[in-house]
Image (cartoon, rainbow over all chains, first blue to last red):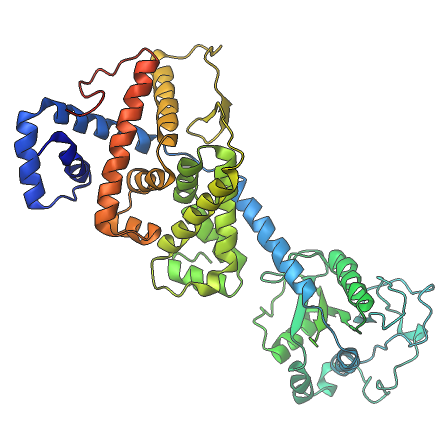
Amino acid sequence: MNCEEYIVSLSGRIDGMNTDEEEALLNEHLANCPHCRALLQEMEGNDKLLADSRLTVPGSLVPNVMKKIRAEKQKKRSRSLRYTLTGLATAAVLFLVIFGGFRLPDRDYTPEAPQEADCEDLTLMPLPTENEYVDKRIYTNPTQCAPLEEATDATCEPMVEATGGAFVEDRAEQYHTVFLYYASGEEIPDFPALSPMEALEQMPGDAAKYFEEGSHHPIAIAMLSAWELEELSYSFRLDYPAESESDSFIVVFCTEQ
Amino acid sequence: MIIIDEKELILQACKGKEAAFEQLMLAYQTPIYNLCFRTLGNAEDAADATQEAFLKAWRYLDSFHFESAFSTWLYRLASNCCLDMLRSKKRRPVISIVTEDEDGEEQSYDPVDPSPQPDEVLEQKEEKQLLNEALLSLDEIQRQIITLRVVNDLSYTEIGEILSLKEGTVKSRLSRARENLRKKVSELRNKNGKPSSKKAEGGLP
């Protein structure tokens, strides 16, 4: 055997991966070959140098990936905003039933003169149906709004007790996506990294885009208090801590077509 | 709550929990980045490839069914990202004299360093630059094999799984990589007027 043929076992020796037979042959060769001894030494030296040159990762790397992941998640959710008109109606009824006492804006409301949010109570904003102007404000003043036909006085009785869990659960099946945000602007863990303002700005915008594509995509956004969220979590079997840090939340319901 | 169990983290990440995935990234970023750096030869591309690999891992986490180690799966993604990147760059090869120090920071190669440094530090730096250059003369699979073995300390079996090679092939390719690296290092040392003190320069008898 010439030196060339010992290369594999020289490298194998460094890794401790030679068979007994290979080791024996190599030992025999190395005893008589100063060239290969030097070669082994050099290989080991390079290995050491390479191992010592381990690089540290730039600190921005993981945060960059996290940013992209969040952006992707958000995009995905926006894409899934395919709502149906019945979705809106159900959302409206659901809300009135669960958190009754608040009325939807009238169908004939004039978007040019919306009421600014005072945000003390549950608010519900139906996003525009076809040809309607997209308004991003929350309508909160129920007195300004005539009730929807579906929202009779009976269903508008305040308080959760009036609802009955069964009713909510029945309809829970119809909602495929629920977005939640702390009203304070903090994101809720495991939900998209959107602040409520962003949610209000982006979701309707997306809905409007789908309108242009020729479909109807109603959506419901509501602001909830902590106890309301607790009820909601229970109804939707969401895994939420009842002891929420913040006292109010924004919730967005959607159904897929 | 800190989850230390890798499997638990993977399952959590599969459910869409970004925080769990972040922990996985933190655990693997160094070996993955080192593989990418040694394959691609510069910090910018290495960071891009590492990010791409992690993004793919996040997107395709559903397809990981614990048939191999998670690390193996991740390395495979990273290895492929690097090879893709090299392929797309082949049309426009870039010759760079920008080198890296051990902090991963780019440093333009400047033969006249203004700051006085102890000879030992300088020499070490030069050696690392030389090693980097020598590594780039190997083919990409050899670069990956030697990095996975020497820098990331993986076994032949693991390397074989990552690169879809038999163990015997890993052994012979690794020896080829070491020998090519050795030749190139001593060639560069000679060129820099620093002949290797060792006696094994040049070819084999």
